[in-house]
Length: 253
Image 1 (cartoon, helix red, strand yellow):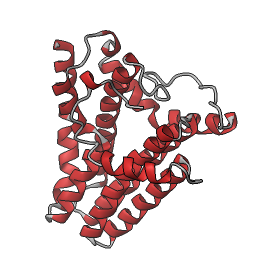
Image 2 (image 1 turned 120 degrees about the vertical axis):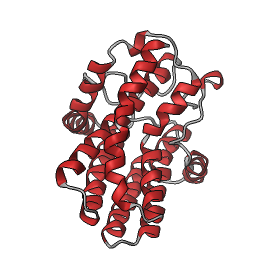
Image 3 (image 1 turned 45 degrees about the vertical axis):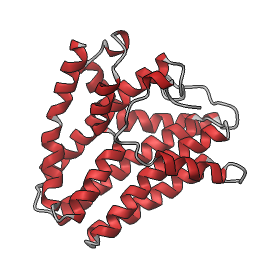
Image 4 (image 1 turned 30 degrees about the vertical axis):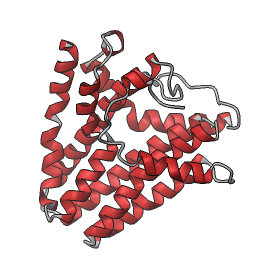
């Protein structure tokens, strides 16, 4: 199932791994592998990338960061080809992402001259960027009857879907709210009317997709490989200014 109808698909700069993710999903369609299994593998890939960053094996770190992004797309693709959507997978994916992001930025702080406070600010900026992108993207998907396991406002415990246990959904939803609640609220305060405005044009969503986690990890990978590790944390701190610019553009559409 496509996330958006053809007329509203945009060039998603954070979704470069989708073609490979589809190949992986199709190869696993008739196996016992589930989307949760794929999510666990992307967690492992992220942790290996962290170890490579700490040991300054930057080419290997880049490889595993990009592999993590591909597998991050593959779990959702596998859920679609097997027709097994689940809130368990949706929240596990998100919880894993934010925890890995925190560990990755800790590793970047370890190998750079950045202060711990600048690192925390960069991490918060990264998460706010990703939250804005997801906020706008989910609004589009909901408007066009796309993937409805992601909701515009995650403020109510969902009912487990077929094949998953309610207690697993409950635990992961609570973890999601604990880890993402402040970011969701912050973005909603900044742009509470986004769901009721005009449909976002494709060019706008392409620009905002630079906030997507796939693009963020790709950028980290590139900067590591070209020897600019000292610029990673300052970049994500400064680039957070674009949050306000994108919101201003959205309001002016």
